[in-house]
Length: 329
Image (cartoon, rainbow, N blue to C red):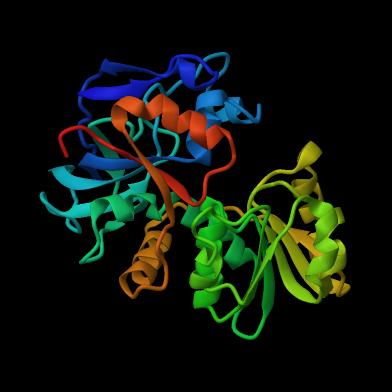
């Protein structure tokens, strides 16, 4: 089968296409023929090996897993032993992590991981970006504990994680202030349509003074701000959450002191650890099925243009998600 691979870390230029063996499903796995995949922040980190901590998991000095790609939508074409929840011909979408990936014609995935049926009336291309960013967003939502009647600020609301998080918070009844450095060209109402109670367009952390305060949670979906820069926006006892480790791993270190700060009723940091399991996949499926969550798509590329897709995501300017269409689908 045709696949996009890299045998060293680096920029989009390290990606090349070659024929690799087709995956054989192990017990509890399915094989999916990929119709649409995506390029996201996870993929770029695996490709580049940055931040450097990634290489502790991906391999040193060279990557252990060569086939790139973490997100997909397609059709089941093979079943491993013991699989009863899926059948050949089922349409599915999901996220694979740390194993041969979805930038290939076929991918093997574990059914107890982040995989779900594509909701009826959904195209595969629309469902493909439904899992990667959203499962990080769900981890942020879970760790804050916010719900109906609370107020939250999402910094970086136009990104993949931010746009998913905005919708997940809105579905829980949270009043969301969506902050971004620029509104999408030609789509000025996007964040309001996704459920934001208020939209603030600003450049840099200095402009956060104009946002106000009293938030139950401030969630940084890009890693471009910090607890120090946003602490004043939180009510006493409120929490700051980031999907990024932060400079000097500060978010991990500050989160370690979080339990004591919470007991004392102080503003504090929490760090989200995502769960890559079937329960999260089912939760996202239900939101999609009832129309409470729909991933935002910025632009689409053909598989032959995969390097261009990576280069675009590397700019940090995408709105929502970037999808890639496989040949012959």
